[in-house]
Amino acid sequence: MRAWELNKFGLDNLTLVEREKPTIGPTEVLVQLHAASINPRDQQIVSGHFSQDVNFPLIPLSDGAGTVVEVGNQVSRVAVGDRVTPLFFPNWMDGDAHSGERSISGGLETHGVLRDFGVYSQDAVVAIAEHLSFAEAACLPCAGLTAWTSLVPIANITSANSVLIQGTGGVAIAALQFAKAIGATVIILSSSDKKLARAKRLGADYCINYIDIPNWGEKVFQLAGQGVDLVLEIGGTGTMENSLAAIRNGGHIAIIGYMAGADMGISVFPLIIKCAHLHGIATGNRENYAAMMNFIEEHSIQPEIGTRYAFKDANKALADLVQGTHFGKLVIDYQL
Image 1 (cartoon, rainbow, N blue to C red):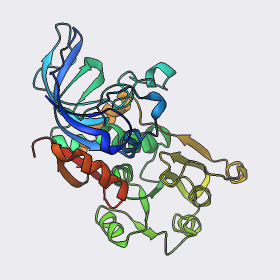
Image 2 (tube, one colour):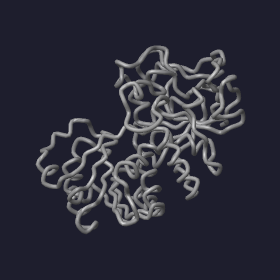
Image 3 (cartoon, rainbow, N blue to C red):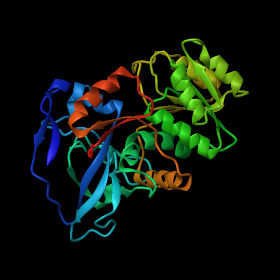
């Protein structure tokens, strides 16, 4: 089978190789993978940001989708022919995660999806909504579930609520689509008027160019009446102060990324004054993933794909992610 292997850190050390097709155990399934999507985490792993957790050689990327082609003799949850996505955390089934449940994730502690075939526990795959293509489904295990966890299990967003979303990447656009399907008011930020126009077409109620309005927290607070109910905090350094200004009393900030740096350097005083809730989000569990997939099917949501790449161009896709010019997800289609 084809596979991309990382033998030491650096994109130049990611090579396309041929490997034996893996074999399954009694409770495992063999999935022929048809598509993968790229998250910022994947690029960070390749570049060495998570160096303490990597054993070489490593097949990267956590998010993919494919067809079950073989099952072990004790498998009962899935069958040959099922269309599935592997879970980001294969051991996290429900509830809050204990250390062991999040100790293994695809493309870091264990091989990821950038290969033709992968072996997974029957408990670590979830059926794909019927209307989704493999490329669309591959956008969901990390980015989709991170957005869903922030909106629903954490903040319990309803049609009466308002949400601020930073950026127009995979998590941000998934959150926009979910929030609008729920009926919430959505405010979105970007430095690109072109991207904001695309977000508007997807249903965003208010679009703010943060270059034009650097103190956007005050603007968001005003647009939402008395502040938004939830901020999806993606920026990190330089954005948290505005996020705190944007939320209502008792509002939620879901920290899902740190694109501008992880050191936020903020005063906790606004958190206390506003009785705000600060949450660190690391995707979610299988129970919430299945609920998200049901919601996607019920509302016929289709993830936004910015650019598709052939399998042979996976290294180019990772390089392009760093440029930050995409809208939605970058996807590798194994059939191209």
